[in-house]
Length: 149
Image (cartoon, rainbow, N blue to C red; front, side, top):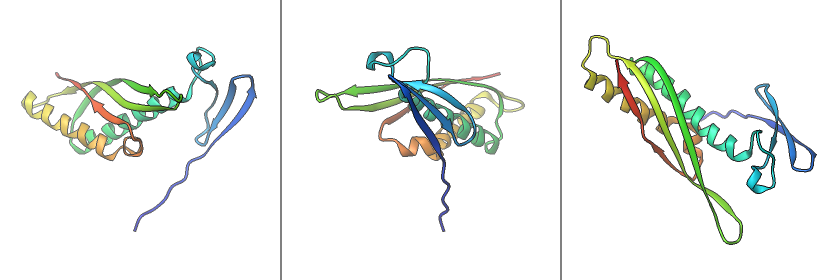
């Protein structure tokens, strides 16, 4: 039988093109539209939050998978990019979320190729079980750089 979990945020308009968000887990911050959409620079935007949601979720799921695949993780860093298409009628959609994780693993007593294969399987599991990746229409592309040391 399936279960449900509910998450909350609260947003409030602060005037002009400013908003304030309070996340259900505690943090709060100001946000705006991006500068190219009459917003302000240097603050969170909905577009940033969308890409960050995918990036943080994939990372957390990779950490989960790395434990299960018995990987000795030394470091994980991932740059992510969201590409949006703007239609003639000004509707917008993210068409791609692209991730470039740089993963460093300790090989221990195993061959590097064996460890790399498990790391790639862990990344596939991370994508498969990512709530955010499973909840968006955008194509998800992961292009890892895996270093075994």
